[in-house]
Image (cartoon, rainbow, N blue to C red; front, side):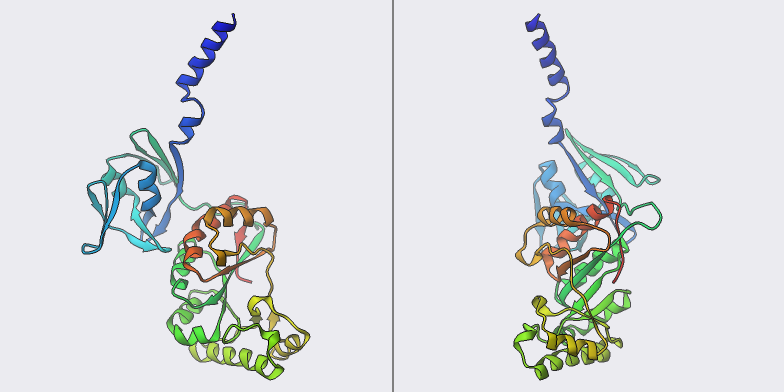
Amino acid sequence: MRRILVFFILLILLFSGGGQGREEHVMETTLIPFAEGMYLPLRPVADFFELPLHWDAIEKKAYIGNQGIEGVLFAGTFHVPLVELALAVQGDLDWSSERGEGLLFFEDRTLELHLPRPPQEENPPTVYLTFDDGPTEATPFILEVLNAYNVKASFFLVGENILKRPEIAREIVERGHQVGNHSFTHPLLPELSTVAMKHELELTQRAFRVITGVEPFLFRPPYGGWSPELKDIYEDMGMELTWWHINPQDFTNPGSKAMVNQILSELEPGAIILFHCKMSTAVALPAIINAIWDRGYDFDSL
């Protein structure tokens, strides 16, 4: 009797793929609605399908297997159109526009696809994305992600960076994001004299006014440095202090998965999340937005 039972258990495991092996051949991917099409990152897909991938710098085209495919650089990662990818790998695409989800089959592997999914209920709890130290070379990539997902955020900009990259500072304001004062040279403000601290804030306000035409009322001190003297300065200038609740420490480049896990472990209504204008943050941002949406939260500027 025991031998018969073991035999049937082995048969079940055999026809079910052993339970574990099947999961290893399924991967979920969120599509990016960009440039009137649906795009997905090429590198992780090629790795999942176990296909060779290389970049032709002359043609500015990626080759997956022997098929060339064009795309766009999005959030620091090369993205390609879904339909063109399916044709390039000769995979079977099952897509529903109504549901905004589908499957891409290639050999024994299945790629689960879906568009970004904001919460559907009315008045969902809100959290706030904030980005410090911009404008930097990574800021345009962050703006691309926010624009694709139709998410607003708050940017605490450094005055000297505004002067270095005025067009990016203007773009932040023109896209409807909020801006805040993050000092002019990014020092630890309490270590400066009262005159020097005030000078840091005033120069940044002037840079905002001249370059963007707005003067922010929010202030975030670099490194979170605070003192009673600094409080008197920013309050006399009509600004409000903005701290944060969640710090995924993106300046240490922990990776997308670690950042998502930490944010979700501390997420609560009204939470302010601290990021920096870094390329690794731009790359992780789609996964972060999707994970927060999956928890039923939405976004707004402060």
